[in-house]
Image (cartoon, rainbow, N blue to C red; front, side, top):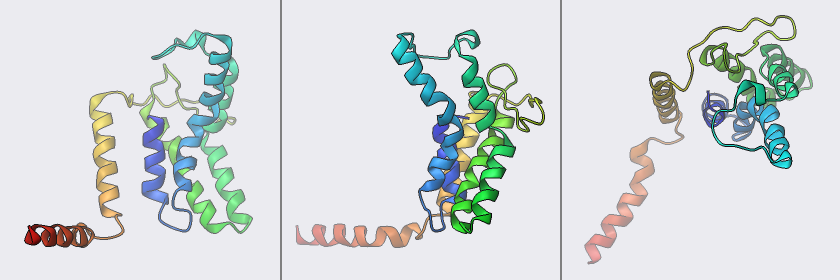
Length: 174
């Protein structure tokens, strides 16, 4: 799944307690950890290009960081460490990390960045359906819209009432 969607899933599911926006970071972190350093590496070496890179052009260390950051074991360990350090709300926000791993395990094929969900204990990769396929991508967007709609802090009619009343008052003066 794309990094932006992961951030939104983190916010949608785990961003409604004390740390409202930190789940955006935890949701995107597993992708940012391997790919931001790789971006700088490519920029410095002058071999940056747009689009999907070939597997052979990606350094081995990117795959190692990807496996580490996308492991359900890594994400769960982070959540447990925060929870046992008495960071209850922070550990709740951090649940976006293992959720990212679960989403990627089913939305990546084995061929291109398959997710080793139980790394380092196992190198098993579930052969998921690519998130780039329209039926997966549009389903993702529709589900995010539904969740954000359900989790909105104020019903839409109440949220729009002050705005509508201001507009009506302006129209009466004209």
